[in-house]
Length: 321
Image (cartoon, rainbow, N blue to C red; front, side, top):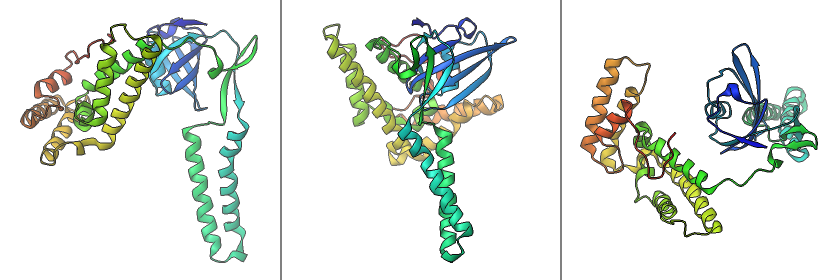
């Protein structure tokens, strides 16, 4: 398979692609009609979704992020025929079992006069199980894998042999995502713990990133892989921790003012809001942030630069995007 650039325009893509994202491997099928394209994504959780009306100049990176709701890492051209579903027997049984149980209980509740008042319990429980099962079906179809028909038979997406993901790409992706969050003023106010190096999980991420940046090629291949794994793992942990804590990370005395700044920042970045309201909200957010003066929150000038479209802050070694 031939690797293709994620910045390739959709119009230049072949019919079938294998895209590796943070969520796993997806198969993307492109069809064209008129001047637009339709991308059908066969996702790692078994779902199939369509993205219609895609303009030819849109990049593969943008299109995949939209259709799969996951950040793409790399993509490959696939030579093959149709995409088929491969059922996983155990997962299929477990996926349909709640439906069977729910329908059976609801049936007992509907016709089981002999159970007396207990029939209403059966009916309610059965309906609840059916609703939960339906919601689970909307979120994933993990009872099936997607495969491509090739000259060697059907090959599942997870079975295509791919070269190892370079450690530099993994770390650069983390830096790029961290830089994006760093320039998102609303996120910085709402999840400040990620940017506080004294928060234990954030400190672990900072140390891992410094260790990677300072290895200067001394580390061997195994050590570099371990360093890259640590950077990604500590970033994921620090981000999850910050989003769990939210603004509770702030000092008690600062939380009310920070909440006001958050509301103002949200209005300032809302393109649907009238321009005078956005400017007033921006001034309010800038004023409060400067008053709070917490080292892990953005300053007023940083907020103004980010919201008005100036260049976002970058980490050393961050790839241009």
